[in-house]
Length: 348
Image (cartoon, rainbow, N blue to C red):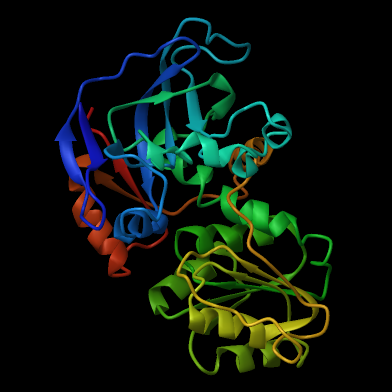
């Protein structure tokens, strides 16, 4: 089968032929429908050897949807059968620690012992025709959703959903939520905010095309990124600032905008991995502003995301490409030419 493989650090992945894997005891073989192309993949390939505890090679693709092809010995479970359309929950923990027991495998307490964060992140992922999932617990039924277009729900939607849920008690009528960066995560964050709360939503981005995407996703206001962005947000909020600033970029300039646009008693939530720094001391942030760096989301939250998608309240904006064009698509992502989320689809 064809697979997109990380074979060396700080190099582009290879599109290679590898054997179709066989599911062992407790495992599930997924026939892949589509795998999302995430900006964090670029960080994985660009970081030097030793930054991550992953062995090479492995297949990329941590945002995967498909159909159950084969249930390995002992893998049968109520509610799932061969042929069912499913999402693959991305972060794979030990499955038994207190965090994993409540479905928060994104915060597995034994993560350092595992050597991989999930399929596509140290273990073989979904940028292939087939993928092994170590347990049925990591599968979420899709129902009537098209798995070819649902793959981004596992990260591009789940990550901002987990981040936004933490602040819902603050997002009352009259409040404002700001989304900085309207890419794969950001365009879903706009939709999630509109679906979950009464806050006005402000989208910030350098790209006019992405601001148009944000407007189509329901943003109440669209603000060009840059020096005047924070001031414009303050004008839109009557001088108070934003109750939630969700930074989907995480670079120095966007974090500076987040700090300057935040209101007292606000949340500044950083989900972007661009490696910027936000100084935290008296005078740099409004009174009682909190800064958090959440990671991905839980298994129960992924089921909630699917429920929102099945009712049509959120919908990923997807550009579909053949699996063999992976490196061209990654370059388009680097160049800022992907609107919403790119999904790689194996040949039939």
